[in-house]
Amino acid sequence: MKSVKAFAPATVANVCCGFDILGFAVDAPGDEVKVTLRNDSEIKIKEIIGDEGKLPYEVEKNTASVAIISFLKKIESKQGVDIELVKNLPLGSGMGSSAASGVAALIAINHLMGNPLTRNQLVPHAMEAERIACGAAHADNVAPSLLGGFVLVRDYDPLDVIKIEAVENLYCTLVHPHLELKTEDSRKVLRHSVTLKDAITQSGNIAGLMIGLLKPDYHLISRSLKDVIAEPMRSVFIPGFNNLRQIAMEAGALGFGISGSGPTVFALSQSETKAQQIAEAIQVEFLRHKLNTDPYVSKVNQEGAKVLTVD
Ligand code: HSE
Image 1 (cartoon, rainbow, N blue to C red):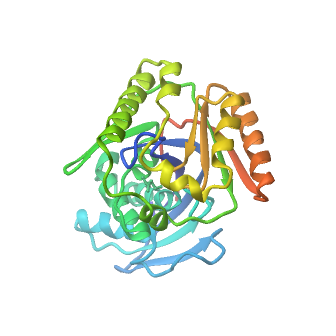
Image 2 (cartoon, protein in one colour):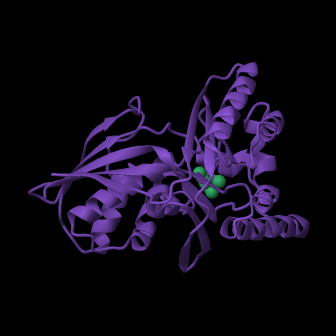
């Protein structure tokens, strides 16, 4: 075995009420990373496709190589590798783009080295990639991209990541308006303290969402998909946000919100047909604001990142 190619899916972080502590993966789209063993100890990015020349080739700045360097250090290996990255996720979109590259790179290198770490043990190395990408080592994109399904980050210190064996039948609509919003900038607008009233509301909703997913209880999921902490600050970046919510709900969504740090918006629903209808309705509304969009409709993914090819 000399090279492994892996795929890591896009993710929706926060899921309204779970700021920095909840996310889920979708089946597609996602990024692909091929890692090839070298005969020396150099880490090199050989090729990046699909990023319009925007991503760095410097290994200490690229999320794929940063994750690999952190992993190799952990297993005390001096192995060198070549990295090839196919970027299918738009940058600065709120769809977990930086996470997907780091996670695909980790799945590939872990497989190449004989899987010394479990998927849960890979999470901190993917978080290092997030730190490089946006200045904050949040885990709510990388953990669901690695593990699949809905993943709760119960605590960061020490890290306690829990996959929720949730409902099978949930569909996700993602609509990405052609705006770029850096996570770093989208985090700067957040307040650093919340009122007791907002903390109570948010806690009620995150608890409700957990129970709704586990039961499953779709009405409870729907009632719980609310965010009083990040959304009020961030929705100003997304033209027509309040109308978009109403339109999505009228088209049959269980809930609607900002995907991660935005500007992509997401909705959850119970059928693929509904998810498509919601996508179309949201696209029409964005067009009224002169914004072109890319829609993505997918089932909530259960498996997470995967190995594609081994040579
Ligand atoms: N929880 C992070 C944030 C996700 O909202 O800033 C970034 O995609």
